[in-house]
Image (cartoon, rainbow, N blue to C red; front, top):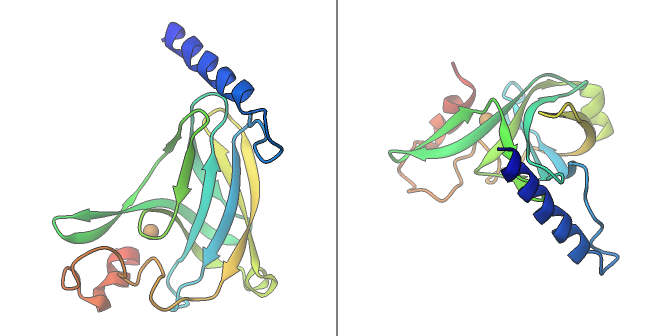
Length: 177
Ligand SMILES: [Cu+2]
């Protein structure tokens, strides 16, 4: 393990040195989060979906929790096709490879936010705190997008057979228990 970790670090350093050329490619040594947005659900009682992009640090780590001062609860989920059905799986942690990019995007990994503070909605942004396995915490402001029609997480508008899941069940399957 120790040798492997050293090798990974060497590769990461090489990549950093090689990437010093342009002003558009700053060397990333700490994990970061950008492009954060929260898409409200058309049903106010249902959770909103959060999307963002993680940029890995020099070494591998994992996203272990997301919290928000503006929401009652936040979970990490992944949408997967399982025997033709769209299912939401709760994730306890998400690996972030050294120097890698992990996208939380519609139809795949996403955050679910329950009961967002009306003041945050009015302000158009939700505060998110990302907690990583090395103890790092990264704050981000997610821009709130209004409840969409076809492309929200629960709409079922994904690459799947149209008859795989009745449209009315898509939301229930997600937030019902
Ligand atoms: Cu979900």
